[in-house]
Length: 353
Ligand code: NAP
Ligand code: F7E
Image (cartoon, rainbow, N blue to C red; front, side, top):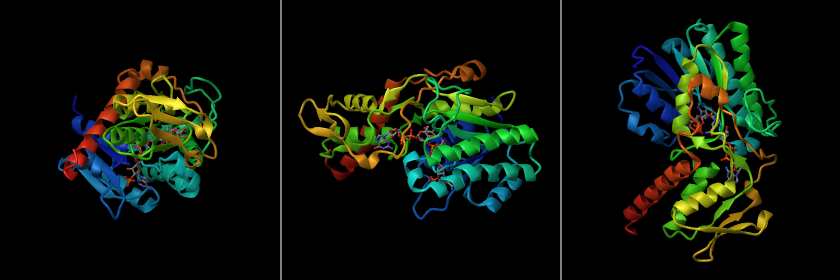
């Protein structure tokens, strides 16, 4: 069914999730407004294919800019706000803790106050991109909506504030404020410094003749990895629910970084053999005997989240979420195949393929 009269504001529209969510909402008939940051180089590559759509409108703003946020929300009077904007890299948050807090914590407060002071408390539904990083040093396995939080990074701590300020505005002002506690979700549009994309890009390049060695940090970290395109459907379902609430979105399956690596290289036609331990561990191409993966302390974090495994039962029963829609293997295939196609195109352009 088309929601022809609905208006959505998406912060972080140029990011991985923002691009998939825009496609979904435009298909549903929404007028979609997106906040983009001024940048000296183009930052709209993920939504390039949508830019001619007359129902998509972009406006410059930044989550650190209260007056801009207030003006945009007052003018648009959105039915729904999806707050996806964030300094989203956990590793980088150790180097930029204050900026991460400004955007990921106070940015959410700025949106909530803008909605409230514009008199939209009972009109506008707000989705907050919450995260499994809240569980950090996990208190139970698997993690559900009732698991205590214990964040392990400036990113996680900032997102904890965001989670609670959403809950507070829900309880104090009766606003429709919901947190989607999303576990890691990846795609062919994932930023290249997140571990999955770093792996699929390197596997593709190495399989097509590059001599590079993929350098990683903690190979034993375990993550519950889903497909971003499936997860944005849940964001919409969360805001279409009968009441505001918090939901875990996860697959219920966890894999190590090492397992992701093995699966991606296998898809690219390279069988990996793992040798050594700790900083000496490396992944060898069984066919050639060459080292293609090594470990460097450069990519270790001051505090690590060792194991994430989500329990999505509530989202399954209340939202009709299907955690098995895209399996781990399918996700690895989608991402590795996309990077192989991209690398082939690069080589063809250079005349070397
Ligand atoms: P992403 O690809 O890194 O996108 C982040 C978006 O936020 C980009 O559009 C970025 O703009 C924008 N942004 C950053 N700082 C901003 C600021 N100060 N003002 C306005 N916009 C700003 O992240 P994602 O993977 O799509 O994730 C979306 C959201 O979900 C984030 O809040 C993330 O923390 C959260 N989350 C992600 C995952 C996951 O596994 N992907 C899991 C749980 C929660 P530029 O393009 O200009 O940089
Ligand atoms: O790391 C380990 C790293 O950076 C995953 C964000 O979307 O999901 C994401 O955060 C694991 C960590 O994602 C490298 O130490 C090993 O244990 O891909 P990542 P993340 O930190 O889990 C959560 C749910 C979010 O909310 C965030 O926004 O992989 N790892 N070697 C590495 N990580 C990176 N980046 N690079 C490495 O070389």
